[in-house]
Length: 206
Image (cartoon, rainbow, N blue to C red; front, side, top):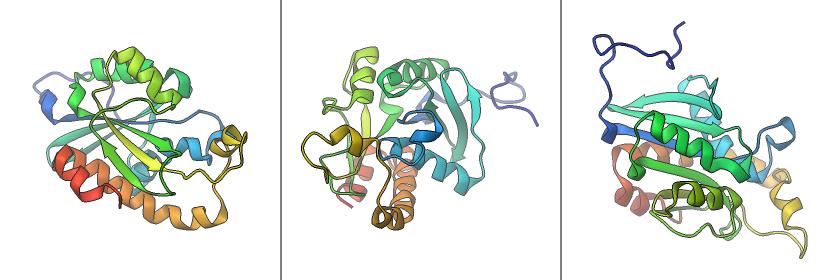
């Protein structure tokens, strides 16, 4: 089976209009010990989408990458393998490689300031103390890209933030995750097909 990374001539595969190409970067840390942690919700959302659509991730430069097509749009799903603190390197590389405009970048992160499972899409903003966003802001030299924040709540005692963020979901959260992941996949699809404004209206706070 031919890899989608192979270059094809224009006769066999016309170049996709850059405005119809999207980079969906789910942030997380590589390694089995991080798979089911709160900080890896970006990876988890993309894994859920890939399984639902039957598309494989392939090992590529600076991450695991999958390609998903919907209504004439091309979504590049990226799970950086640089660890959270260097996420910007992978995001920048794939934006340049796939010729994806900044307005078509969506970054998925966890957010301690939102109740569990709450969705918030914002067109720009500060890093909010998130190391992945901090590095992306630094590498891209801008805060003007869309971020999809997934609430993980702040149910931890003083001084235990790192353990909480890098801890695994509670049994109650695990039970509720599938529905929240389905909703998150809808956000991604809406971002590419309905646009940012409609997506924010339809999903923020849901």
